[in-house]
Amino acid sequence: MDQSSMRQSNIIMQPEQWSIAWSFSLYMHYLKHSFIPIINPKKYTKILIIFRALILTMATSNPVTSLKNTNEFVQNQGYGVKGLADIGIKSLPNQYIQPQEKRFNIDKISVTNGHDSAIPIIDMSNLDDQNVEKLICDVAEKWGILQIINHGVPLNMLQEVKDATYRFFELPVEEKRRYLVKNSPTSNVKYGTSFSPDFERVLDWKDYLSLLFKSEEEALAYWPLTCRDEALDYLKSTENVIRNLFKILMKGLDIHEIDEEKESQLMGSMRINLNYYPKCPNPELTFGFSHHTDISTLTILLQDDVGGLYVRRLDDDESWIHVPPMDGALVVNIGDSLQILSNGKYKSVEHLVIANGTTSRVSVATFVNPSPNVTIAPFQEIIDKGDKPIYKKVLFLDYVKHFFSKSHCGKATIEFAKISN
Ligand SMILES: O=C(O)CCC(=O)C(=O)O
Ligand SMILES: [Fe+2]
Image 1 (cartoon, rainbow, N blue to C red):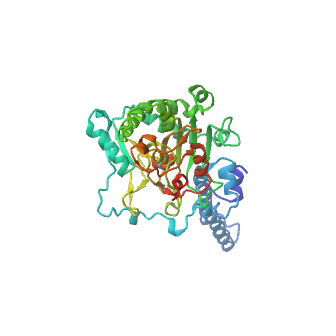
Image 2 (image 1 turned 135 degrees about the vertical axis):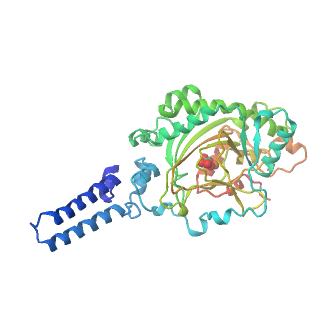
Image 3 (image 1 turned 90 degrees about the vertical axis):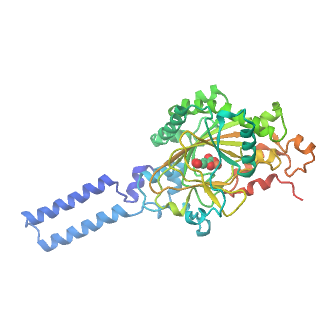
């Protein structure tokens, strides 16, 4: 089923069709009152009323809540939730509606229970300062998230990769469809929707393009041309700040050398996700991205100026904090893999993105991950110092499979790697 037949089968009208039909009805009204007494005026008025009622029904009817083919349209045909927003659905299809108890009540969550409510912001231009190093390690322990400024990634690159994200999602569906899992020439390039639609009970109001970096050559050959260079340049330019962060975080664990093995555990692979959250007809009923932690060691997130990312406080389960958009800043959050490697000292942070009823939003998430075939477990140096290991050895690939085999479940994913007592 293509987009036009979906429109027909659901009699949805686009704004321009709606205004043409309405003008036509006004024109008929004008004719009636001016000079055409051809039809009996009473009959004419009746026809006019029926015609207008029909136009109103067509203009306001929701095409999709009653439609069994939403998944076919969104997932298989590759229109994504952006496709639903583009045809102007007026209410959210059932697949996206969260049960009452799971919905995110902004009024309730903005209560910060008297805590310091701002996510720490760290200036990376002064890395030799011991205080800055200590601050970064403290924040990784107590918050699991920070914003960094003066990080060395050129500001124009930030803008260009956000523009490229918009460009990709605004491509005609025929272009985007080429990167659906079933069509993509490589498993390293994947265009999709929600999080893991085959396993989720309720879907997220989000589309994404996920690009796994294997080599520059491979990226040049397979990444979509419309965003390829911008994504690659951005990815390369974040490498320095990522290395600096790891150096500092390892120092905080009393580890002073990042050897080859540690390098493959900390940053053995990189994935960049371009996220697109279209405007949503009932934002209060759903999520852009529901509660989750990242499986990465670190995630570097670039958001636009719309906002909507919230994190759960590590010291108070009931409190969520907004991560305010800051021009030129990057958000850094700890992922599950670093929590495992640091034996729980650095903590992954649960986060979510609310849906937005007035505008679309984009973000670019760089996941710094272990190599797929590497085993992760608490660093030996930590255990040698006398710490009891909390986590067992897990193959990173097994952790990934576990993560994607079910709905989001906040911090519960990491239980998979816990040593049971
Ligand atoms: O869009 C955002 O702000 C967050 C995205 C995110 O959490 C993710 O891609 O894992
Ligand atoms: Fe995330």
